[in-house]
Image 1 (cartoon, rainbow, N blue to C red):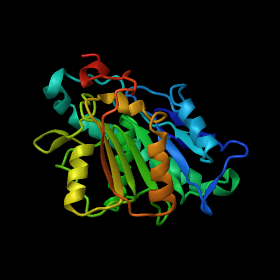
Image 2 (cartoon, rainbow, N blue to C red):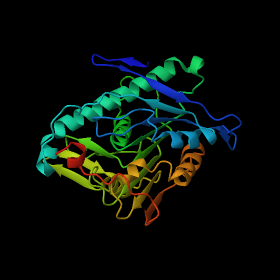
Image 3 (cartoon, rainbow, N blue to C red):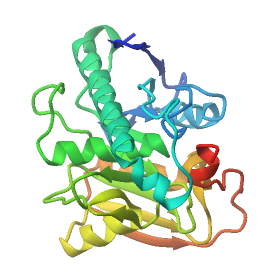
Length: 287
């Protein structure tokens, strides 16, 4: 248990590197990977069987995996149908995102406080998430970039962020980055109907996705992020962690461990990738 809240206790699981795996790369220790599960802020499990094969890949490649709980801010909340319903619920979506950020920061604080007994370096962490978990992960990076680091150890920053079908929710206009907090990997389907690939906003409230963020980062000349765009694929990318290990491995080794300022903007058309999560907002909230 890493945190106690009014509504629940929050737990983490720690999956250690496989015996005999290589825990360094070119003499540098590999980071531990924190994973934030998906589920539309209404459901999900930190160590669900869906994710276990990916955890095993990371462990076999010498990475510690830390999976965490967070409070589900949209649970039992009624979202109206269609675009108007989604936008009307924007304040609640934003609250759910920020509650998740608070819980991630609490997990980092717990790791820092228990670094000796756990044997995990709290300053060598990569944050990753899928769907709602990717939204929380990107929001963590956005808060750090803006100096909103309450609850984090002094001087803390993630070594990297990996977002599988993520975005940033805002109620005060489009996200504005003066700098990137750390290397970021964005993976998103161009036909995603659950988490906007571009943006979904009205009157300064809404969701700004991977394509929007990448275009703004390019305008600012940021060179330490990678985006992979999956043509005509929907929200399936949220569960492609196992399928895209080669991309993740390259990002972890080059951008994160070696600290290379490496920028990739790739459009992928791969009909062999599985289609199993092509859902919309209405599907998730049973509208």
